[in-house]
Length: 496
Ligand SMILES: Cc1cc2nc3c(=O)[nH]c(=O)nc-3n(C[C@H](O)[C@H](O)[C@H](O)COP(=O)(O)OP(=O)(O)OC[C@H]3O[C@@H](n4cnc5c(N)ncnc54)[C@H](O)[C@@H]3O)c2cc1C
Image (cartoon, rainbow, N blue to C red; front, side, top):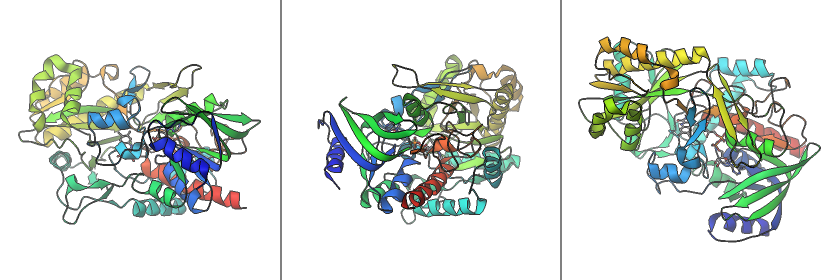
């Protein structure tokens, strides 16, 4: 590690260090350290390249904050979790902003993309070298590296309720494996998330990569398609620059396109944001079901890929949040929070959004437009999820939309359906992708089949932005497998 690396490492981890006006060099600058950036950095560093990772958020060790707590949102989420895609209705979204990105704060639920999805991406965007078998072997690799497995012991009560409700209706359901390690004889509450700060980031560091946290890349300087410098700001507001041979932008599906746009690259970048819009409900049972620091591992797939049902984080603050849409009717329930758990219905969406960097503003403008079909599917999803809860023995169900009724039995379902309107619902998402889709078809793809931005010689993206559309399942497996694939290809090209 050279002087640059040592200084930058201190800069990122020791509050108060001031390196005003400093200037550094590296072979490859990786921007962002989440599901895309961390494996990218590990593969490149292990091949012998001089890698500098710059991450905007702090390094927070697991155990320092309670999972899914407000404290975690404050320290590890962007804007404390308050970020929104404007539209009718607006869609609240959350992003990790810390070393490890979304992988530190997420639920750890692992799903491979389906063969149909891979096929759709290959044909629709003309992605070269994208054979299903090879892609699935990358998923094998991710599963080994992250200890992807099912819960060894008992499930949480909230997960068990979802399973039993689906079983009672005869609806297809399963347990989703997670990237977790469990102690011998451990159960669902004792797992330790195998996030990037536990896996690929230490690997990258062991191989010689430098990981700088609390430092934001503001823009890249690009001359006729060739990028050579990044302008940075540390947590104290001090500027610096880094010169590099190549840059790989892994800042996530909102901030990768925003950074590229701030750097003068536009075209198709940021024009096709895809998400899985989600509506929620809270369900009250006759006994305690609430496990505040974990999420259910079962999903109901009877109507997949159009609709999926699962369980959300349910600590008391989030239960209260789920009741606020119809607070006058539902507020009394909040004191019963130990008996309440929150569940979601997620849809595949025909709608699309945009990410636009605005001059003078730190964060981009994000918009999303649901289609008429999306709105109808959200309503159908909430009604069917309510059925699952009733079949699971819920005493009361509290759907999250303004003027929602409390549902106590099947006779209330008609009222629910009549009153639902997507405009009145709290729609949210944690799955953001497709803002820099990859492929050789330049009429739809912003980057080539391995993530290099069309029209540039050395600017790459390697994160959720590259997925051509939303995969219809939890996306991290797809993001990581794509990142490994492209990082290996990058190393081959640089070596050639
Ligand atoms: C609450 C939550 C729950 C989720 N649950 C699941 C789940 O159970 N299963 C699943 O498969 N997926 C889940 N996801 C989605 C998954 O986490 C993401 O798909 C994945 O993390 C995306 O990887 P990425 O590399 O594109 O972005 P991220 O992992 O978000 O990483 C991007 C990183 O870049 C950094 N960055 C941004 N801008 C800059 C800049 N200008 N300079 C320097 N650094 C920058 C950010 O701080 C961030 O750390 C969840 C997400 C959230 C938020």
